[in-house]
Image (cartoon, rainbow, N blue to C red):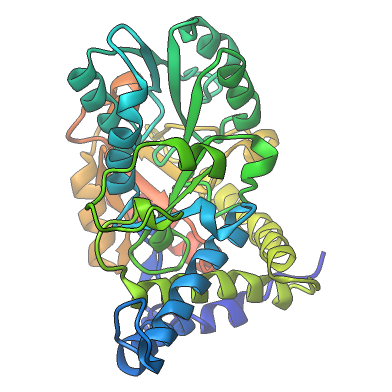
Length: 412
């Protein structure tokens, strides 16, 4: 495998290349954007800031931008068509919206499965729906040794009354990756729909919705180097039959029937540019072929680089007395995690550690990070939570070494 072109990668990101004294390790909460993304947003706002459906050039340009954004989302996720891609304000907003659209399919006594590994964006919408519809909610724990949802634990929660299983692809706190295709297969065999939160997986590895067999999958563009948008995949046949909550005069066509209000055309231009950037990463690592092939190849190269960085970070943290890493630390299992590393220390509160790093220009997060069920299941104090360090492919080994030294100093 050729050397990862880290200097060329970093040069694509103005914030990273210009702020050389700042280390962006807050990536699970939102990544930096390459120049082509901000340029695409600005161009769409200045050259064709029009609504859709008009018979004049600017509106036609907006139509083309809307379509290109949805097509890019389909290629990113491996969907069959842009008609399977719904774009909205955020993953959480899309999930609340889709939960309401699915609600009429369920009746009192039906069951919904959620997990203790998920971000609240894939828990609270289903709890609210259950409250409104008289549904039963069953929580599935993750295994505190493997840090994943084990098939036997999901099996214990499934029944003939299960109508939907909301499942996490990768944890935004422990970083662990579930055997998602296996879990989806189990839920579908039980007759349940599957709704997958891939927000933390999509920045680090290629998603293939057809291969894993899910009914729905949702992610966030601003966490894979794009603008602030949520992106939802849904099987076309299923989307066609679900009741859409919309205004009366809105189109019944897909995906528009699920996209409320005037679309954020400029951000859709940024979404397409973000997918183009991911394809560029593939090309920069010697991958040929179409955009989807280059995206997949770019992820593969980035994953290898990120694992080296995560390994160095985990090794450095484990060498510090008292530090507990809440996640997979066995080097033989690094393929089972994304490079998000969370830790606690009994002698230092998480806020003080994050503040100490922040004063040195090292951007990290502390707290529960909306992984409320995760910290509860781990027995971590809710508000204090953890110190979360999240690596992206534009981070360097030097940045990891500087961060390890800064944590050691903060704990001293």
